[in-house]
Amino acid sequence: MSFVVAIDGPAGTGKGTVTKLIAKEMGFVNIDTGAMYRCIALECLKEGIQNIEEKAKIIEIAKKIDIKIEHNNEQQEFFLNGENVSTQIRSKEVTQIVSQISSIPEVREIMVNLQRQMAESKDVIMEGRDITTVVFPNADVKIYLDADVEERAKRRFKENEEKGIKMSYKETLEAVKQRDYNDMHKPVGALKIAEDAIVIDTTRLTIEEVVQAVKKVIKK
Ligand code: DC
Image (cartoon, rainbow, N blue to C red; front, side):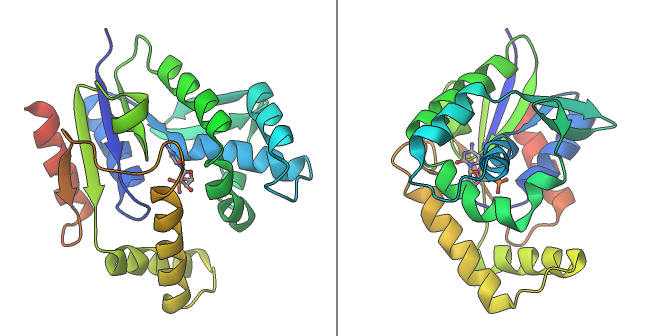
């Protein structure tokens, strides 16, 4: 039986960075499920799908898509139909449509099955929005990372500045609020706090402090 650490939370809580560091320190395989939805969004863009209403085509893509994750020097590399798309899946265009794509129930069903397969016979730390509630409701460890929306917008604003993405703080805050709304109002797989999840508020914590807090929960 594999050991599963499931982590959920809204965008900007540091889930990605924290799970990467913990995976390295504690020897887990790290799986970023948001990146899997991003792969489908990228493939939709490549196939020229302009409209989210083209649901049947999007579901066909999700059925056929070949997503592989390779772990090189603690980095997760994403391969879409054989091509390394680790950078492309972070583009603005993908970010714009991924939330809608991930709200299609049939797409989620396919991804949830794939995520469960990925954890077979491996000790994993998996992060996303529905890992503690849908993918692994019986995970060995269930954690919900949270932070005030203003703090998360500040973090995203700083990241954007570093990447040279021009967006005012106000616009960033609105975008984060919109993403929270979308994530929390999906018909299936909506972001919510599992009853038995340990909630860690990261608003006033450094990444290292969050890592220590999560490790403490896992060790317990
Ligand atoms: O964590 P992220 O920003 O890379 O996630 C991309 C999108 O996928 C985001 O809109 C939320 C969605 N997502 C989801 O619906 N379920 C997951 N398990 C992970 C991400």
